[in-house]
Image (cartoon, rainbow over all chains, first blue to last red; front, side, top):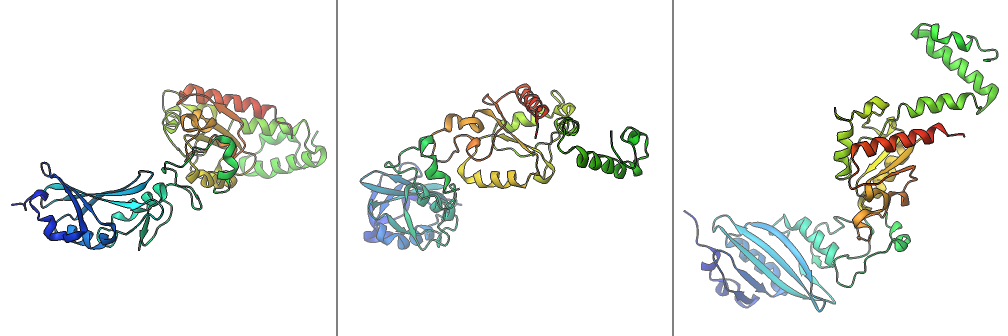
Length: 158
Length: 180
């Protein structure tokens, strides 16, 4: 006996005007675009709708804006749900999801490190894959690959 | 030739084991005091050092698989006196076998500094030699010689165990020529 899949949830009623767009829920999965300012409320509502497992938090640099994507899985509904939201490129900041899904901790650290998305309220926002003090965000489109001659810059961060 | 040593050098081998170490110590120290870093003593230390190279037992990436295979039954690196040790305090050889990232760079330097002198470094494989295919990547050190002095470079991606053993034999040649 399982609950209905994600496509049967009444997302517009659940999320109100935090919901920007609801893309067609094919099969058992779906994609929601929500307003970044209401992130905490959306996270809580989605969690209470049965999506208890956060698989991935990813950041994308679209040059003119940044995007954050949350991949969720519900064991009760046996379906995936993708949340996404757009952030301005000059101040990419969103509330942390760690209060709702503790597994967001390292994913958000990586997204901050790689594409410079700041997660407000994160308990431990420091480097994950690069050494402490590394001051670049290497997966931004504006990042230039280092030539070995630029080594002097990087050695200081060791 | 041992000067006024308590036990003549030539008779040391005939001593019982309990007496051997103090007698050898006294004989050697009197020889060193007499001759300094002489042409006589240095080859003995070089001979001992190059026949008992103890590499640090740590692996960074896929070259570590070849490193491990070299100590298996087929290639058996221990016949050259090469025995991997788990503590840097017991090592005189660091084989950097894999991609060195900036995250691990200062740990590598710490391990190198924990090894007692004299010590040597072998850069095994293309990544350790020059960064390999990740040379311009944001996370990879383009060659471990940017961090620690390297004595022997081994090419290959990864090098076969024969190549690793050849690198160790080249290092033994270097140690044989060591003067200071």
